[in-house]
Image (tube, rainbow, N blue to C red; front, top):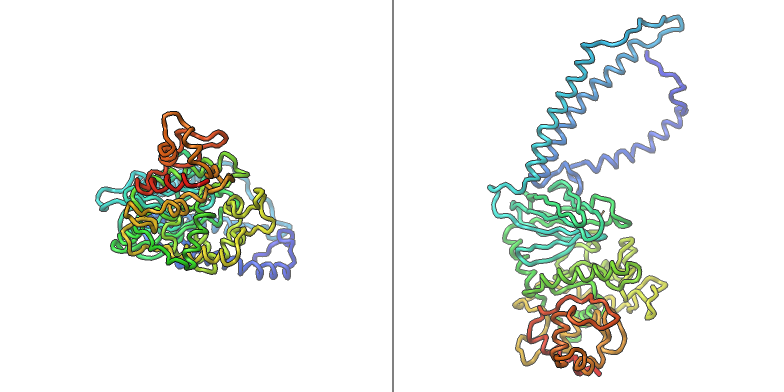
Length: 496
Ligand code: CUA
């Protein structure tokens, strides 16, 4: 019988047994991730790209398995067959070089590698050369990586959302893949392979979801403290459901009933959250507006990464229709949302919200010692209730509760829903200047412009004349439309 020298395995056999017992569950747990049912397993595929990749993996795996068994088998056979049997064994006959053998073991691996390379390269080129023409109407999506969440834009439909990607089943999706900050990687294990999201370098990929359902996505490139918590969902829908979702994204929620928790939450959201989170990208023009706003948020954050009160953040339009919270970390419901607002880091370590949003700071600008927001429990609950109520309403797509009747637009309400994230009505500076007395100041600000004209210009083209001491972070706000801007100008002039 074959016996191994003890000196090769210094562990006593009892300890080896214990080690094996301890390692077995770990090995089982790791292998369980390979079962096709696992949410991030690449073996249970739900799209042709992932299926091609899985088949290629299996092809290479079996070639490698055969090579492994042959080579290791030969090594083990030689070790046993020609082992030293006794102290009297003589040294075997020594040889050097064997041309036939060496040519054989050079050519055979080369043939194997060529056999692996041909289907691999064919697949890489096939997937990089764009969507084949015969696969039907392509849906274009821009996927943008942020620390630590995903933004999805549908440029052909002017829809913008975050962390939950909706796509129609069976239709090719062409992705432009970018990052706003560091290198991330876009990966939907069951539907397609991964492609890096690189700042200042657009990448492309395409995929098809072949089954209706909800699939996991994951950032697959280390990108900072919350990398492992940077997830998303892909919701593959029937064409009808997808069209309904698109229509819903252009339909504003119904206005909250006066006096309801939703109404209170709406005011609190506008005052405390709307600097970084847009939640009303439903009206015409709001898509371009949100793209400008996200850029302005980024500019604000990058100009002072320690103390900025503004940071790129997920768009929350129709957030009540979402199924997850915190970039795919939790199921979305009232309890999880309250827990998130109360202490975001307890759910997702490193989240920028807690570090930068003014609500987590004292009036002096210091971070609050308990890490909690400066809101009561009922106020947090109202914000959560309001956000969960954000679903497509019965209306026409107008994005506030204001009457479309031009004579009756309430400037104060327009201000509350659009401006209070950055501007107070007093003298104090939030992100932008306090607006008390703005009407008087406006009259003498720019020669040739009346107070009305100056204020209107400041709304439509904020960069045109900047108040000394402020960088312009404000995006153009012309999408509000003439009626609301007129009402806003009238209201702002009343601030004393
Ligand atoms: Cu983003 Cu890892």
